[in-house]
Image 1 (tube, one colour):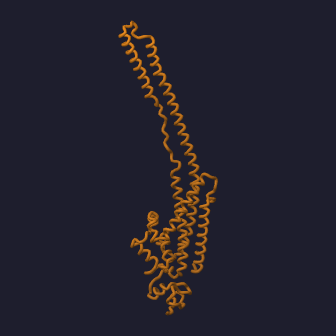
Image 2 (cartoon, rainbow, N blue to C red; image 1 turned 120 degrees about the vertical axis):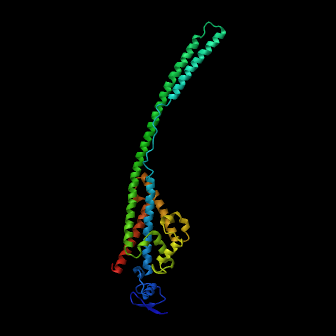
Image 3 (cartoon, rainbow, N blue to C red; image 1 turned 90 degrees about the horizontal axis):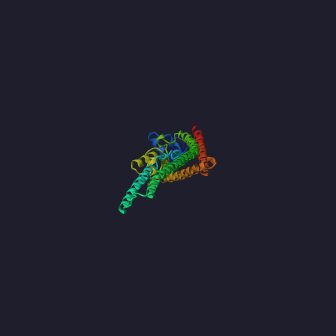
Amino acid sequence: MAMIKCAECGKEFSDRANACPNCGCPIEYQAEKSMGGEYHAADKLAPSIIVEHLTIAKELESERYTLLCAVDKLQAKMNKLCNKRTVAKPDLNAGHKMFIAFVVAAIVGSIGGFIIAYIFNSLKGSRYIISDSVVFACLTAIVSGIVSPIITRHVVKKNEKQRYLYLLHGEESRIAYEKEELDELIQQRSYLQSKVSQISNTLDSLYSLDIIHPKYRNMVAVIRILEYFDSGRCTVLTGAGGAYNKYEDEIRQDTIISKLDTAINCLYQIRDNQYMLYETLEDCLDASNRIASQVSALTDSSKNIEACSAVAAYNSKIAASNSDALVFIEAYKGANGL
């Protein structure tokens, strides 16, 4: 065992240690510094500080994503509301064809009756070619054939109008009801969006500490880099054995997925290689489903959105993460004179 001098604070410590016990400067920084290399400021931090920073960022990123998913689900429901449906106007010519058919049938039937009666009486040698009863029957058929369809046509028209008015009233009632539901959902969506903005502001403040390079300030990268530190595969961010280099190598080798949308679509495929991301996304999707479902149900009651159990639970979670972030930010600024 040999003693080395810390390039940051000047104190001596064992070369077998992972970092200077006095200031927390990683052992990798000592070697890099002794060779005249440049090092990112965050690599002067103890791994525990980087892990704490990444853990808070992971929580905030996942909470924001959960609420964004819930907002998308509400929006999908909103898009289905207040869409007007065409109500077919009544067919005022309904029964017209039937009316003509009745009249034609009556006339043809009556003429046919006259002809048959004429032939029959001629064969019998009757001096009355057509009897009075036949004439009366034929005339009655003609009159009935004209009057009956007129009445029928009137009834059909009346029924068509009533049916149209009934359907029109039903459509107007549906639109009015869905308009109230839509207004409620708009308010609930705005509430969730305000929470998203709150989380985004906290994340911006956390990332502004410049512990993590801007390229890796996203949910997928943060979780993967945290997984490197959590598993002991990395203790620094930069350098040959650093988390950034390992992350880029895995992307190039197609070992991991770096796009969030792709990861969502291939959720079960990332279970083995990106388990922390898989587990986080599963929790996010489950929570967003509960929030969207309960918030949507509030439109049928007089409850406030904050009374929703899923939203109340998530508000508590957001408040805790926000508090952790603010405490970390203040402590970090105080320790580094920022």
